[in-house]
Amino acid sequence: MSGPSNPPSGASTPRAFTSTTSTAEDLLKSQTVGLVNLADFRKRRADVLEQKEKEARSPRDADDSDGAVTRRADQHPQKKKKKAAKGLLSFGDDEDDGDSGISTPAARSSRPSVEPSPEPSSGIARKLTPNPKSGLPPPRAVTKAALAAEALERERLRKEFLEMQEAVKESEIAVPFVFYDGANIPGGTVRVKKGDHIWLFLERCRKVGAELGVSGSANGSGATLKTIENSKKQWARVGVDDLMCVRGEVIVPNHYEFYYFIANKIPDPSREGRLLFEYEGTVPKKTDGEEPSLLRVPGKEDLEGQTDDPTVTKVVDRRWYEKNKHIYPASVWKEFKVGKEFEEMAKGRKDAQGNAFFFG
Image 1 (cartoon, rainbow, N blue to C red):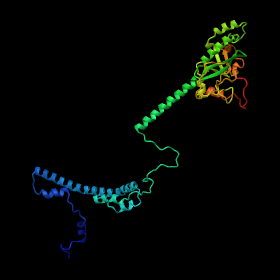
Image 2: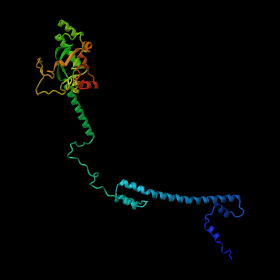
Image 3: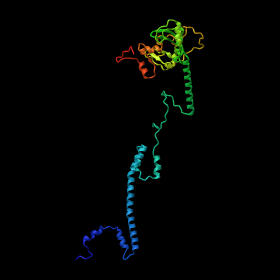
Image 4: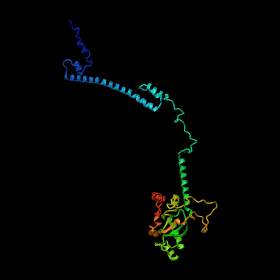
């Protein structure tokens, strides 16, 4: 007969799996036995609820701390990799593997001593020395004194260039020319300086024409005058603006200097491989003790350009040119202009087969 000392086996199983934590209601029931005042009941219930909140919060904080420790443990190898990448040492990984997650001051102080110093044979630590086989000059120290010396040197070179330029402009040249009104009329030779303008050359040519009594170029129709006196009067009425300087096939504007064409080496389109004004752009050399002669003997001057072809330089009446510019050779004359147009003209006028044009 089964008594109360031997309960059935089914009754003991639920008791083993019941929760050991009491709920807020159980705590409230254990603290309020019998009749209790309403104020005391409310106070005890608030205390019970606060106690249960603390108990529920404490396991959550424990879980958060465990998660943070786990995250730090997971992130620690990444930091180790960064340190190893910065060091670029093959033996840095072995040290990091042996270290713990928490670094101590002793470990920090021991790390710099373990890292070896760079080898003296490496290219970074080696002292750079100048190459004796290099042809480049050694670098100069950029100091205030060096900058001041360089500025003085530049100023000296600038003044030297200006002096040389003025000496070139002051040197005299001879320009043989002809008057042209459909035919070449001998004009002679004019002495000018390389720094003179074209209009000054034309003024001297006008005076030569008036002295010689050249006829046929002063009037617009091109008809010849009968007497020298009439031709001189006609030349007296001609101004510089009424005359043109034609060099080859190029009409040279009056406001340009001879030095501009000499210094820039402007090519001549009508003469391949030649310059428009073939004069030296350097200072003429003088022998020691040589003095310029005060007496000019015609035909004995040794000036640059004395033996040039006079037909290359033509002095033309502008009125004659306006009436006959559709007739060859005036039809191929082009005014000089700085730019690509003149450069193309200087290369020569040729067709697709490479044949040179005769007419412009």
